[in-house]
Length: 377
Ligand SMILES: Cc1ncc(COP(=O)(O)O)c(C=O)c1O
Image (tube, rainbow, N blue to C red; front, side, top):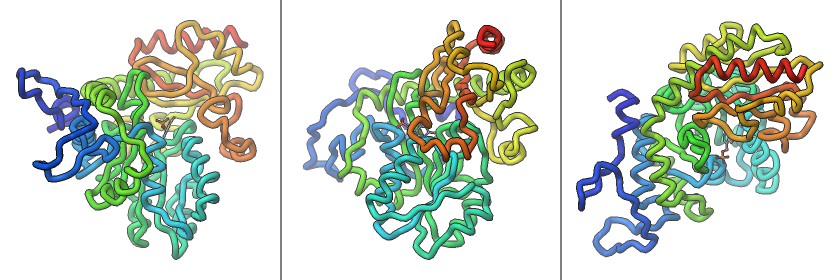
């Protein structure tokens, strides 16, 4: 089946008593176990709605197994805490989501776990590998600069050294990129973004082989961080339109990116769909669309906050991936906690504006941005 069909049907379980075609929401936290093969409990990631929605995500990512978590960060910390021991070493990619960067740079030191930060280029990853390296964690495209790395090449290097590799696939979504088919071991998502898709859910997911998921689950169930039945159902409902939403957002973003290139007051546009983007050729190879996220840099003469305040109907808000277009200034939101020097080195300046392109009419989106720039200039 194609993804549009899987998004609607995979995993979903009909309601048996009344013949309802949607999965029922089973809220019990006390579940009889005498006639079951396992003990079920919401924190153990094995209740009905948790399994239904995990099965849909597994079908979309081509994963044998998966867990649905209470946030994207719960998925990331479950991978890291589940797989790494004190004295071991992990490689993470520079320019990743600020929360992931902060988790590694603050918590790892406290826990005695070593880390290196890599550009994500295959040669650099090879150079960072140590005898005690156990995990590589990357993001592609990255938040907010939309850097793209060669996933198949990176996966091959880590496998040569017996290192588990994991990727944050939030920006691409399972619709546009399936890292497991390129050799990755684990994929995670901030479900708060495209998977939820309506800016009203906080959730996450991690997917991979049965053996890896079981290893992670055994630790994650002690840390908490599973998702409750109601939210699992909302996520399942949202996923039914994932293909539709993401393809529209991706089409809109390509048009917005091209149009913004011509707008006075914008000095740079970061979008993997632009032929001028350094990762364009790799993105063409490993993605089936370029996604709904882009960022642009305002001319130094334009005050970014003045510009954001001049927007009429596009909200200036943190988060992304919803049906509505959102703009934000990463230095004030997603990357506010990143050290200033590191932010500047990466090119995340106050002039950088991130756009999560929604499903609205694309002409309206471009006009709104252009008008706000004119007012702020
Ligand atoms: C790429 C990416 N990964 C992970 C996260 C963390 O997800 P959550 O906020 O659901 O914990 C975010 C949040 O913005 C993100 O943008």
